[in-house]
Image 1 (cartoon, helix red, strand yellow):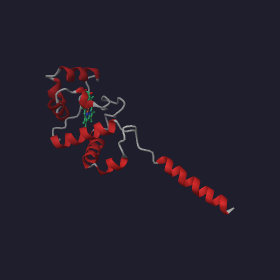
Image 2 (cartoon, protein in one colour):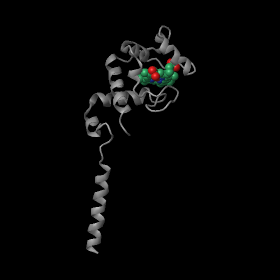
Image 3 (tube, helix red, strand yellow):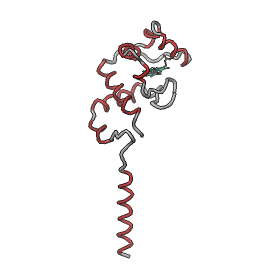
Image 4 (spheres, helix red, strand yellow):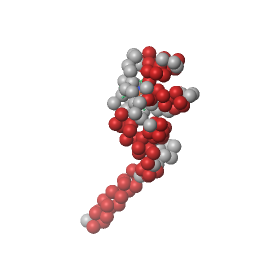
Amino acid sequence: MKYLLILIVLLGLLSCAENKQPSDSNNIKNEDIAKDSKYQAGRSLYITNCATCHNLRYELTGPALQNVEQRWKDKALLYAFIKNSQAVIAKDAYAKDLYNRYNKVEMTQFTWLKNEEIDQLLHYIAIASNKKD
Ligand code: HEC
């Protein structure tokens, strides 16, 4: 009986150890993310302001934001789009095409976002895009 109990405890410990796999193939570790204050700030901005219309991996009202920075050659234009998408749609062919593809749904304006906060958002998006949940 005593041995059975020991066996059960050991099996329990073993299954906990199995759950401690590295979080993904890119070696982005949850411990590192927990210490990354820029990531945490970006994540919280994202959840409050963006997640109603965007998911990283699939389309909602807006496009999936996974690796979005790679789709914008001009970083300044990307920042401008996040602040006021309509102003960029008026002058940029990529933005105009995107707007048409998404049924001319106007993204909320975020003119109040500071560049530093957009940095945080994009940092979160870039890391979370390549991290397994
Ligand atoms: C009301 C819904 C809505 C909200 C809220 C929203 N978006 Fe969007 N977003 C869209 C739509 C729709 C598009 C597609 C372009 C368009 O229709 O203007 C888009 C496009 C984008 C793009 C360009 C995507 C690409 O593939 O190039 C980025 C970047 C983006 N949004 C970032 C954000 C961020 C960051 C936030 C939060 C601060 C946010 N969005 C909040 C609806 C939204």
